[in-house]
Length: 77
Image (cartoon, rainbow, N blue to C red; front, top):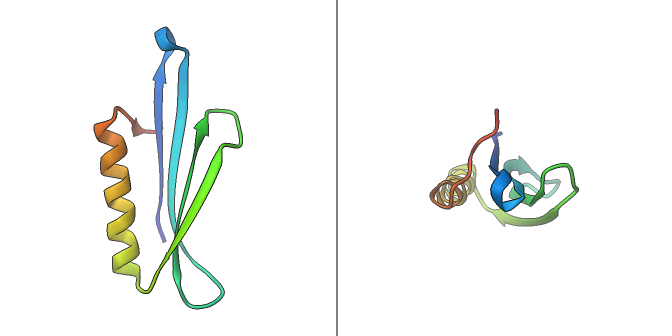
């Protein structure tokens, strides 16, 4: 499946954030889109949503990544 890791770092604002979106299967045949976000170096928060198929899950994940990129996040180095 796929995993995207985004960072937003701005030393002037003391901002060091991460956002991770991962598409993975669960034990019941559904596909999970797991989001984790927070301060870089911390555990952060997590939220998961299930989808009936891989294309639907990947479309949702790419929409989440596009939204974060509009807010200033960029792919992690």
